[in-house]
Length: 443
Image 1 (cartoon, helix red, strand yellow):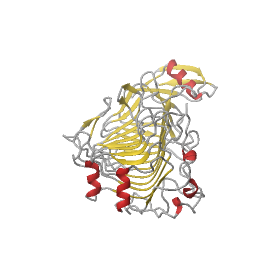
Image 2 (cartoon, helix red, strand yellow; image 1 turned 180 degrees about the vertical axis):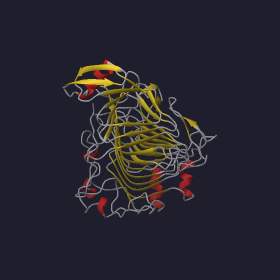
Image 3 (cartoon, helix red, strand yellow; image 1 turned 90 degrees about the horizontal axis):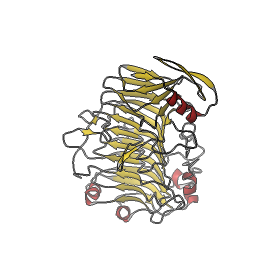
Image 4 (cartoon, rainbow, N blue to C red; image 1 turned 60 degrees about the horizontal axis):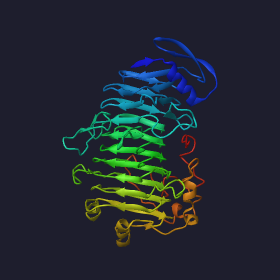
């Protein structure tokens, strides 16, 4: 790894942090630089991580350009550490196959990846994002793919591959646009295996998708995708992981789907087929047309994907809930591969698209209610779509979310937790797992 000290980078960090102190900025091979506004040494990182590197909360780390965690290397990031993506150089962190990232924060000291721009001037796309490549199976012909914007080769034949552990991590104001339709996701899981652990993850204000899986088998639990300018939760190329306790929050100035789900866009029936299991998810669109006309649909299930989606709450989208868009995807319901059940969709012009409503009426998708009031659910679109302080927690146990619709229990497989409610967050007065480590700044 190369460490560089530059006054410009330090000044950008100072502007971003606005801490108002005079301290010394140091680096391995440069004289100290004193810059106003920084309360810790700044380390500017370029090039590659090799061997084992430990980043701690004693420093600020600035990503200058694409920084690669090489094969065989491990990057350990301690609780409370702040990593800043340099906007001018498109700072990005990329974990290559056989590299590992262990970013382990806590509820009171999350790890934060953020912009180098001043608070109040930050925006989607200020820097690159976080890309993780693994050796788990994908359904691209040949078994390997090349990540968007040259972010590494991914895919292989090891579903249990491990790329590390991430816990209590926020990624905000990322997703730089290189060209139209060529933007980075907040976190891209590219062929990542189930040997790693990803929980308590937030991606906020990303320029492209918040969380996207390009094949692989990786699991995720306790995740928040907020204010993404494209899709919030996206999969393609054969993702077959598990997800539980997922909260999706839209801002209608520039949003696409809550979920965009594909198998393979070039051949809808390639194997291994995308077939994730998702339990306990809340999708909150933005009904405010003053923000813009985006945030139209809770989910677009298409291009031959299979799915299990259970224990859900959907509200606030400008048009509809879930939609199945083609025959290849409907076929997965007809043959029994895809499942949906135990949910409420309410407060939208069409609470569930006709392509899904037919399966509800026929009984293929059981225990789904498409008429309800905010009072019955104990939650409103106004509450969960509040941009600065979204509230996903239903008001009490005497609600649809708390018992009148019984949840479907997930498999007892060591990953999923047994539940007594539907939606991402347990009804009050239970502990809200989103409290204490998430943040929703708009700029």
